[in-house]
Amino acid sequence: MSHQDETERLSSDLALFLSNPTIKSCLADGSLNLSSYSSTITSELKSLEDECITIYRENNQVIKSLRTDMDECDLILASLQEMLLGFQADLGGLSGDIKSLQEQSNTLGCKLQNRKGAEDQLRDYLQRIIVPPSLADMICSGTVDHEFILAVQELERKYQYMHSQNVVYSQGVKPDQTPSGNEMKQHITKLRHRAIGRIRMYFLQTIGQLRRPKTNVRMIQINSLLKYTPLMEFLLDSKVEIYNEVRNVYTESMSMTLYALFRTYAAQLALLDNEIATRKDVIAVEDSALRDVWTRVNMSKRGDAFCLGARWEVLDNDVSSSSKDM
Image 1 (tube, rainbow, N blue to C red):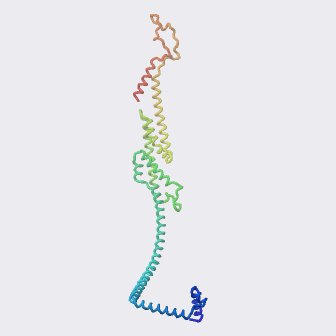
Image 2: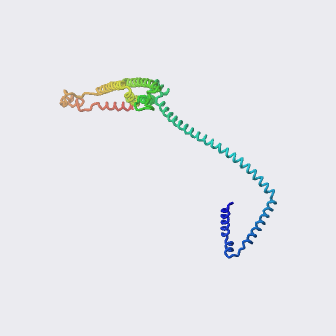
């Protein structure tokens, strides 16, 4: 220890002593004897040292056992330290693995999202172009009814989708330019021609029933023609020639039917026509022509053009026949 260090230590000790108010006051009034105070401190330290040695000897076994326990604890702590260091190294490796797994998870999530998007587009594309067997059976051999109308409308939507110029998929590819779309386009076109032929035959046969005698034209118009207006709209969009043919046949048939009905009606009205007087008949008759042998006026011989005659019987017959029909 150098002289400077001893000086600094002495200065710190003096500062410590001066911090004690009792020592400071004794030094101030000169009542403190440093030599006696030093001998007192030395004897107290000696006494405390002896006491500590005695206590140490009395607790020798305890201290020895404590030392042994501390050594064992040091060994256990050393092994724990090694174990923790191993855990730290393992965790470092696991952190890298977790980071790698996270990157793979993000990559797989992106791929899954892309596949779902592609799956949705592919599902929508297939649903729009594929013709189910039930739809094909209904178009080819099904009964012309409400289900047939729905099938024709569904087929028309598929046809319009295949021929639409506004539908464009990735890379500018249109539905009919794909191999599957080109193949289904041919089948849809054939089914469309089949539907047009069946609709034409249905309307021609139904319109032919209007020409039969004693046919309820109104019922056929409501139940067999008016309900199938979507089929006529389909013909107008798909084949104008057949639409015009069906319309002309219907117009001709209704013309003939109405002509026959009005002709029959006119004939029946002609049967009810009873001429009472013509322009050649005299309305006013002389009373002498109406007198009989008894010189009395016979009203039965009077030909009155304004007399109802027996025409009221015709009205009674018409009312009775109408009530029977109802």
